[in-house]
Amino acid sequence: MSDIDISKYLTTEYIGRNVVHIKSTDSTNSLAKRELNSENGTVFIADCQTAGRGRNGKSWISKNEEGLWFSILLKPDKKVKELANLTLVVGLAVVKAINKLCNVNAMIKWPNDIILDDRKLCGVLCESVVNNGHCECIVCGIGINILTTCFDEEISKIATSLKISTKSEYSREEICAIILNEFEVLYIDYLENGLKNSISEYCKNCITIGKEISLVTNKENKKALAIDVNNDGELIVVSDGETITVSSGEVSVRGLMGYV
Image (cartoon, rainbow, N blue to C red; front, side):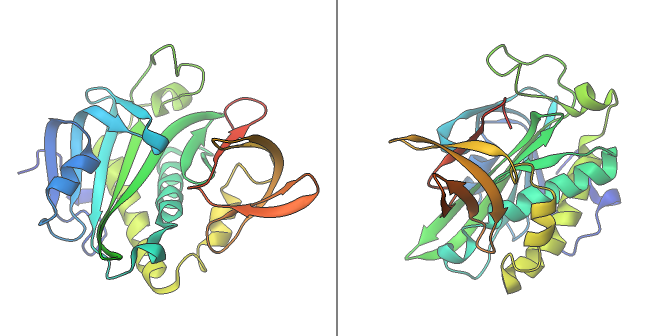
């Protein structure tokens, strides 16, 4: 039984209607994948993660009750390749919710980091459980720095929290519910239409577009100008006079001037 009550803020049909709240876990994504029998739309929330994960195997520091660390368990009847860009939908839902609730101008660093005041506020990690090419489930993990006022030295120059940026405190319950409200609307449309109906709004909220960036792979580090994101969620860039598209699984994007 959850002692975090998001129901009073929730307007969803099914996402977040079942909540599993735990004081501490390794990561909420791992917890969700251990609980695959839970109903579609179940949300797993932890006060603390001891092994939180970000993209490319990076750790995510998740201190006790300083942020909102949660995962959404989804069971779409889709092939895994049809869900490859769901992470963009999650990022859009988060930025819409944060801006609406906190009256700020958070943006998305392609594909799904949430940036506020040129620093990272939130990360998203979507992981699939696949059986014979079919997606058995997909787990969308979201980590938001809410009350943190002091970060570890290694990330102190690139991370922020809502408390640092707004000088205000917000409840985890309300933030979680508003994100789920925004996400369910986008997700239902996504299952039917992919990114077709949401990509325009995504691009309006994407801080990467129009910036000089560095595309980083295991083999090279290439400078480019980001010009758009297409309906497949790929970043369109111009590099050495050539227009190319890159997917989030192929490269990491770094700003030439600071984090973004």
